[in-house]
Length: 437
Ligand SMILES: Cc1ncc(COP(=O)(O)O)c(C=O)c1O
Image (cartoon, rainbow, N blue to C red; front, side):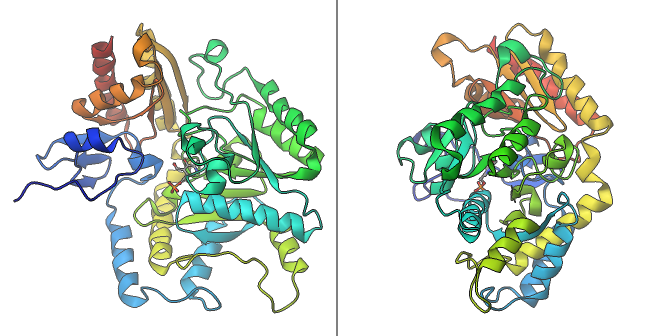
């Protein structure tokens, strides 16, 4: 076979030139494993990009995709519908927190975020508060790559080249290694950081702010967990100033924390939840915003009968093939108990296994919750902020896919993972971290 030509494909979030000098190609996947062409097997400790929650290449999902593509591959979703879109929506909202019973579909996490921000603006106008047009996000927050998402996101390089097209300000992040290093589960210290929202409300004025958007725990920001009581306090401050609260659960949703959504796990109900990734087990792109009845009813009631209430939507909103994949994914999640599995013994095993690395000199923090975790490494001065990428490259060579973020190795294994497989990941990482020392 001729050698692979890598010229034409401009790769996303990748240093193209160095990647193309030494491409890493995944040929196939199965369960918790990725395979290179040579047959070399790599444990996917990141479930793809925090998304293949039920493990790779589940035949049930593949069959549902194929059958749907043969029955109804596509039809317009503007002014027409298909039963599957309605049936799937009803099934989805059985898993969302009480009072959040409506769903608006897009194709990705980024589109879910843009949709949520626009719904927030539409809601504020609908109730006569059209001056509320800005958003509050948080440092280290990641909300995708579209213009709204980069504006509310708090990862500097993601918007430095593009400006901040949507009006936004940011609360402080909650990573505090000095006080919270080696926390098991939610960190003890930092509830007071929620008061930063009060500071921003005082600065901008509540009558300017449409919504606050945060990930319950930051994923792409390096697995930063909310301090105990922090999310509750954000909810209280939002209620006090009549601000909407959006939880971006693109990563934290679908069983990652041990509940269907982190909202339920942490006992805080937002007004909207964004979702994607695990919603279809990543087999087909799909994004969704789950919306409270209060918001939906307000937007409906404000528009004259027979008019479009919300001028927004995508050609592929509720794409039949994505809905079919999502239905089959829910079948698996429900049947195998995956939406709560991380709260049981396997989550405890994950916690203990990751924390067993705390005895290593160059491990300065281990953080975990459910089936997500990060190992923070002591980086040499010249590699500070970039050491995770080096560690991730070595882990790949050792047979583990782990994500390098800053100086941390971040992981979110498929929710089907077994204890001995966790031990294998951690055993390999111990070797990698020893080499890095
Ligand atoms: C919290 C969060 N929101 C939004 C997104 C964007 O999702 P997508 O890459 O599907 O657009 C991501 C992706 O990692 C995410 O982690």
